[in-house]
Image 1 (cartoon, rainbow, N blue to C red):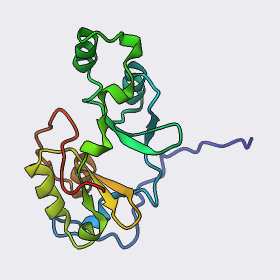
Image 2 (cartoon, one colour; image 1 turned 60 degrees about the vertical axis):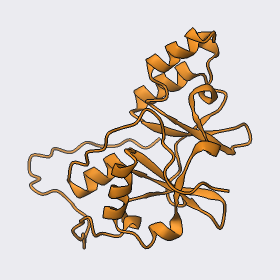
Image 3 (spheres, one colour; image 1 turned 180 degrees about the vertical axis):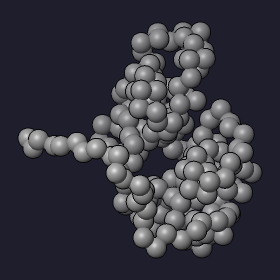
Image 4 (cartoon, rainbow, N blue to C red; image 1 turned 30 degrees about the horizontal axis):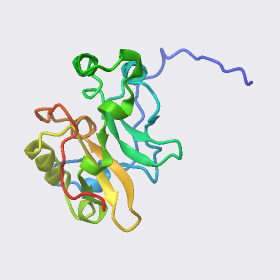
Length: 185
């Protein structure tokens, strides 16, 4: 292991920033805002994890959404922090489930119920178009699929968009990952 050194910051006056940064606006191409899974590893959780474990993990890591995968790493659905809310776990207990036996799959939104935008359409859209869609469907997230490869290509997050635009995006959150555009067939 290499020993690292800390240096005093008292003589530093500037913050580094990317060279050639262009300003962003609602007219900026949507592709500049989405998390592309061909470049960034998606956050996944195993389908066998209990809801209580998943909730604790997501709270501890400040994650609001994970992709649920089966034992063969195949995509089976999504689970959000709202899906894992204590009230939803208590509701399952009231239905007769043992708290410790409630699995992520009992609370997730299965892929068969999800809708997504197509990557070809996203490539032609502005971020303003995506913001409008998120607002219209009151969604915090929207999947992007590649219909040619039958894969989830990435995701838009309203909080990421808001942060990059430095604008508040007022989206009334729904209680589940709502069905947005055209499903992967």
